[in-house]
Image 1 (spheres, rainbow, N blue to C red):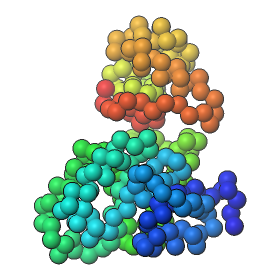
Image 2: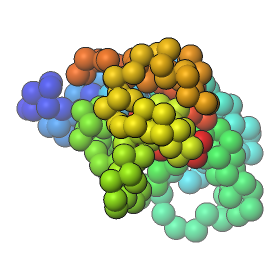
Image 3: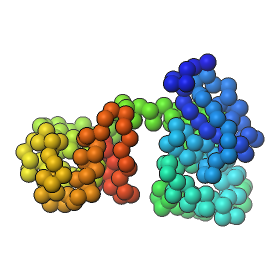
Image 4: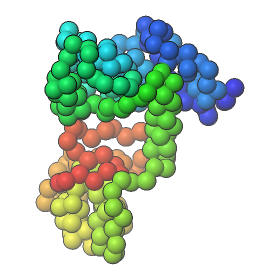
Length: 237
């Protein structure tokens, strides 16, 4: 068996036994599996992601009885990031729901409820997705995943790219910060009061920037409010 530190911790709802995913997870040496009742979702991965698993047939039925949107709302308000895994292959018709209704439901779940939607062929691939999710969550927490997007060329472009990794900082605010302070290190060492002297940087954003920069390695920082940038992912502001 893998050690607890090397394995991915997954909590499975005790009502999910019939799906086959729990059996797949039990057979893996790289998973620490806990079975208990979950208030939201079918799986909890690394205490970070609440995952709802649905076969294509169950997805269609949950649209008809309204269960899907109640579950999506619960996941959207959960302390963990909500994820929907759609399991199965083949045509989506034949479940008593039109293709347009299925697409509309996916739009609602992904765009308006803000859930990540992943696809899996079968229970084995769903289990594999959960493990991948846990591994990447650990890598991301350690700063081991690359930042998405292009790789800027030129000194100023790279400086702005670095500043856009700060919480609440998009292209415009990054440009103002660089113009005001003159360098990236000067921004990083600026006080809350100095940061708020820049147009568009309020006390809340300044506080999150300082909290991030002063955090010890491995220390968790509070997530930004919805709509603001997360560290390492530029936003459009």
